Length: 191
Image (cartoon, rainbow, N blue to C red):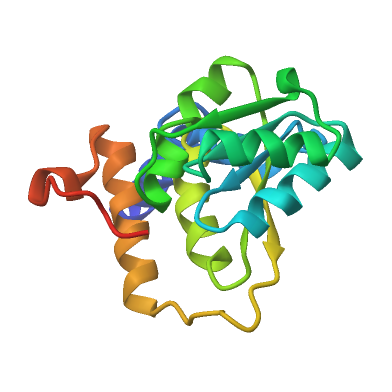
């Protein structure tokens, strides 16, 4: 009986450390974050996402970061059309896929002390992107809130396997600092 009690106490102590000060502490901060949104992040792949993100950034007076979006000329024209200035907008073309949308910018956001990000993506892509984003951004203590963009009539169902695969890739990135897909297949990834 005493051995069981000691094991439970040890496990509870370890779990408390993991969440309070250990490697899970950033996730706790991200989950409990109450800061209002500080940035709009658009996941590239559809110009309607960029349009909605630019409009949202303008309405909320927030900076806009477009990751892996349309060509710079079109994106610049679009954000001007929505009334944003060049200093409110950052275009980032490092990402090749959903995981890259987060991994390529998360350390920049953390260094700028960003704690809450609105993530704009298509409704059919939202569940997978939020799962990936919560792992990657959460590892830096950043809370994300999804903003779906209507994709009808071109919505595509994403498989559960694809969601799990990308979630596992995100977990591996947090642990290793590398995308395991790069090690297995150096060719450009599918969006």
